[in-house]
Image (cartoon, rainbow, N blue to C red):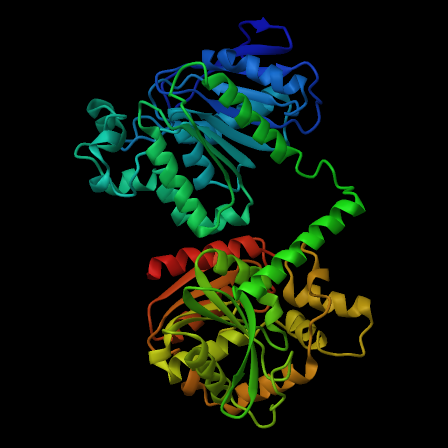
Length: 562
């Protein structure tokens, strides 16, 4: 670090420069350090200036950082700003300048090395073009960042260049556009670098990493940035990616509103850093939240938004939990488990405008216990009857584990009733390794102690580090036995193809029971178009491990299906 000057007030600014083979250099930069900084695990914020700016942007924002540090709404952190001019923080189309690669692969490691913050969390943010670059990098590489703060990002309000309004093209002069995206403009290259398109394409990874996202714009922004910001907000909202979005009334791209808006974004960052700062929630607060949730559920039931239906199947009665309205999604639980596993996902689907129909399997929660000598065809007949009675149109069938086998059978036997299939952690033809297979069988052994049972659940169903207590109960051995025998009685050709329905396979990345090869073989068996999405940080249980990522994946795919 070539230290040129150090300014000391409530926060000191170090000025330096570094050489790189990726971008023209030397690159000047500034690092802001608060006096009260804890030297261990220091958070770092990569704070990016707008188009044509420089490291002096950090000095102009120093009052907002000092203000937030003083009122303790933002914890002490290192803030680094490189001078990047009109680079758009982009790896250019012609490869002549690679600013994104420079920032990620050289600048951040350099800041860590120079400041001694070797393991602290990394955040990224900025204003205008800096916000655009921050969103692009955060959405491309959510595993690298803990959060992003984007103030008035200069986003085009379209996901294809040929649909970008002329209003938005004013933001990017023709000469600069040619340098960045090629001449003629490379439409594919432009799209893979558009933050909104990246967010839609990479929604599962963004949700799985629980990336903190703050987007803000003025409604009187003379660069018209508010339209692109609104599109990004709507796309994130529609697929269920949590974020905070603010449209500030009367605010322009410049002017007196900018300082307070910067401070508001920093305070959001402080809330995400301190979201676990108060783990000792008062019992009274917990009771109040619980009572509120109970009241809301009662109102949903009274209004008909949530209900429990009893359906007469071909040779039994079935209990179906119904929530929401819209295109129907029928949900079928895992081996020996109840439809209550889908409670969180059903709520997400209902909130997004779908009707969630969670079917209790035979033998549980009011569904009759006609389990003797059943086949997958019998269970598919049950689902077909649910669709006929409760849905006004063909349904999406979502099955977890064994429920995926039933879903495939329904699609094979009743193609006119099935819009598409969604298979969560569904086994393919390849057998699992011995250790998780044995643990899977032990889960259903009632003689195990609580410790032995939890160990079996952990080994078979949960990725290392995830808490198996979420599934400490809810296991039904007699039902599991009947379901396994039903599969054995059913010839594979009857159900394996899943008919001609398009299918989404959601594979937990750390699934011990279903290997990636087994998933590949499963995809080859299916008759329609198949998409495979891998959920990081999840084992075979999946639903309690990565509920948000599962919901975002399912919603994104369903919306693409139309």
